[in-house]
Length: 75
Image 1 (tube, rainbow, N blue to C red):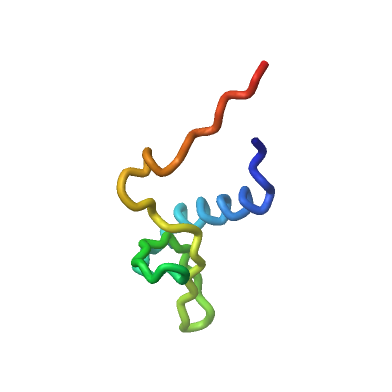
Image 2: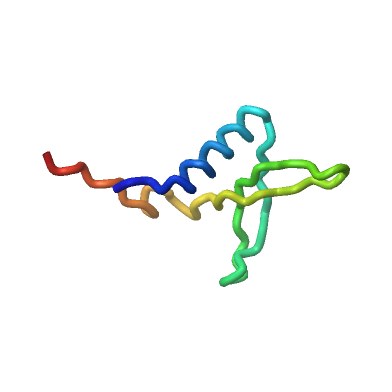
C-alpha cells in the first residue's frame, strides 16, 4: 500500500505545525452525524485572525479497535 503524495504533504504540514507549537485541539460537531468530535488542527494567522486547518479527529473509544494495521507485503 502506497501513501498518496497529498497525504504525505499534509502530514509534513502537521509535523511542522507541531514543531512550531501551532497545533490546537478543538471540539467540533460532525457534519454528518451531529456528534461531537475532537479535531486536531494546525493554527495559522491572517492578520489579527486565527485560521484553523483541520487534519483529523481523535478516535472514539479504543483506537486499537478502530483500525487494522497494514498487512506485510509478500516476498
